[in-house]
Amino acid sequence: MCMRCATSNIYDATLKDCVCPQNFFVEEDKSTGLKSCSSQCNPAAWPGPFKATVPACVPCPNEGQEYDVLADPPKCLCNSNQNFMDAAGKCLPTSFTNRFVLSTSQYAESFAIQISYSSIETLSGGGWTISPNTYTSGTIQYYYLDAAVGCTTFKDVQKCHLLANLCVLQLYNTDSVVCKLYKDTVKQLRLNAYPEYYNNDGFKLGPMPWIFYEGENALSILEKPRKVKFRASFDYQNLDIGIVSRLRFVLAKYNLQGTFYGFEELYDQLSVCKQPSEDQNSVFRIGVTQTFRCRFDLNDLVSTNKFERPKVENYFYELYLRDYNDELIDVPILIENINANDGSFPN
Image (spheres, rainbow, N blue to C red):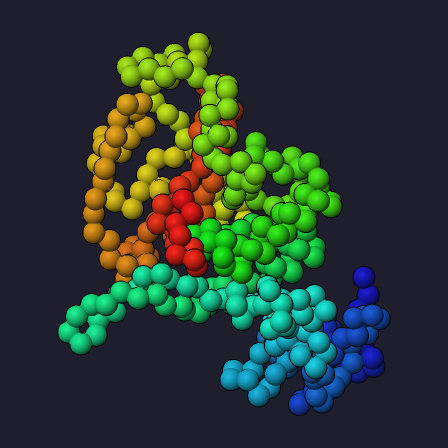
């Protein structure tokens, strides 16, 4: 491949690159590959070296960005004049984001980022009072547009997982904007693109993760004949003939952004209270009930010391029961203290 400089006198044989005079920058035309000298970088690039000794106009990494010299420090930002909006560090055209930005939309970002709590303790006048309150979530504000556009417009599997995770952060509250968008997206996919892919036995096709039981309640689904294929025993196990004395659980592991990390056996990943190994192991024995209690300092969740934070922080899990023949069966999670906007407890 030949390097093309605009004039022969700017080619440096030692550096094997195009080099400009002092106070000028190398600027490359991406369409032709031609490198020339410029006294000022265009708005889509910033003055910084391609190589340590070659000052050059470095283009902003994402479409729709321009270099803002007035920012402190200067950096690449989405160009609103060109109809782009910031979404999780990238720029999306406003033609995609308007549906989730306009205040008249039922999925407006300004509503989606609000998390309502039914009972918040506050100290006032020497005593504690309990009252509802609403707070803005910085996490949802950062990721919502990226998840909403990526999932609904582009049918991106990872973005759909991100949208589902944002719903999980709101404890599956179907009154929240994020969870409404998730459920409405599932409904549209069932009616249009994938009429048969989503059912209560899992997924066949399509991008949406499975976080709600639709059409039937969880109890009727779990009590379907032959759904769980093993026989239980308190003290005898023989997988060859389908008898188990210990339940085997498997976790599907994701990060917040929807990246899938694979499957792993459940041990203590879901336990806030850490216990001796013999107590933790007994949890999985059939016929055993364990109750663990401990005090947990919420400040540890935001500690700058990683050893004080939970070792599995910011991971999301789907829980499955492993059959005697190694099939995975979905396990529903019951959150009893979900308080809906009407004051009811759906679960």
